Amino acid sequence: MKQFKLCIFILITLCSLLSTVYGQWLETTIPVGNRPSALVWNPNNNKVYCTINDSVTIIDGAANSVITTVPVGQSPYDALVWNSTNNKVYCTNRGSSNVTIINGTTDSVITNVTVASYPRALVYNSANNKIYCASFDYSSCGTVAIIDGATNSVIKTDTVGTVPCALVWNSTNNKVYCANYYGNTITVIDGVTNSVITTVWVGGWPYDFVWNSINNKIYCAVDNANNVTILDGTTDSVITTITVGNDPSALAWNSQNNKIYCANWLSGNITVIDGVANNVITTVTVGIEPQALIYNPTNNKIYCANFGSNNVTVIDGSTNQVITTIDVGNEPANFTYNELQNRVYVANWYSSSISVIRDVMPGVEEERSSLDVLHTMLEIYPNPVKSLSIIHYSLPAESKVSLLLYNISGRLVKTLVDENKKSGIYNVPLNVKMLSAGVYFLSLQTESKRLIERLVVVK
Image 1 (cartoon, one colour):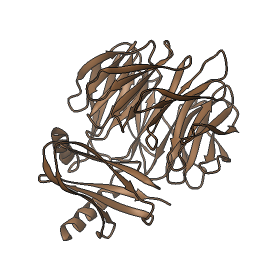
Image 2: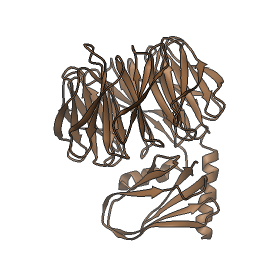
Image 3: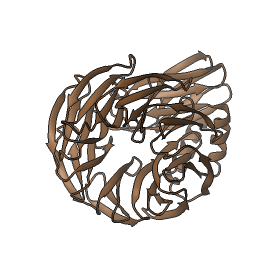
Image 4: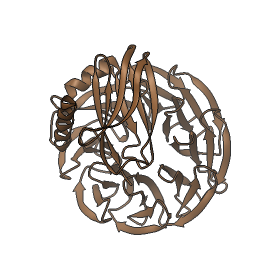
């Protein structure tokens, strides 16, 4: 017990230092096909998927090498999503009006699912194992096709507003939000019944979303109105509207400091919003035409892809200061984050390449690297959590396993696993409804390793 309390103390100390600047550099550049765009990371198999011309390139997350390239539909530029329940990857094909489903283990195409014209956005609902696909369908109102994650079939298609372009899932209330660009509205879909609950007017071309699980708020970047509209996740009513820069194009949420970042395409800056007070904290100047954002929870940093200046700006999540700017390929368009190797992947649209940015914390990264070689993993999603989290862990070899939950004082709260396990990947549900709000620590002990992850329970 004393040893575990010491581990907790060390982890808390490290968490407080996450904003400190350590080594960070462009690790490598991976050549891929033409027009790399959408990216997603598969933690089960440590692979990165990237859409290119009529294909998806699959990259080994440890070796940074191309494993294979899988043919999909036409013009698969817009969206990829990973299904953690069935280990599948979904790809929208704009030109062929379908969604390609790829097996995450074998890297083979399972099937193609027909949806409406011009599929643009995807989101995954892990509570009900459903995938939502928003399609433009210029000839009529837009639609959202709901795909069963187990059977690979469309369960239902909901009519939404004109030109739906973005989706986000609220796991607290099990709702899906759809931004209707030319409809100036947000459609809210019930994640259980698959029916439209309500339509919320926001005006000015809603373009992108992010969900704040701590405060259960949905943030919508409204392109033509130069603002971010904030919705209450329970009532689906507008809380407030915050003026940002010109042409807001991307959003990201910092779960450690509860901040929202809005990239303003025409202003060349990022607006930082307080997740509690709903006001602007500051504005950070970045490069030309900021296109995409991603948050690194390991080191509490925000990465901004500057499409027009061919670089990535890295911002400290605590101080809101620019740490560095890293040159990448031409027209960086999208991101994904590999938590095992603490790498950020950048799709360079005009360079036919992916830039890999490495972020190292001395004393921590060395331990992570040894875990990477063994493919040992411990992850919690969602985190922070209000009701149900799924704990993902993997074992490189058969071992006695203890998976234990402790409170911040080091007292054992719950034993989740205490038995021999064969090598493989495991998912363990954790219902936190009976736990008090606060910080907890999850400990995975095998015969050769101990991993500890921080869990935040909110009410």
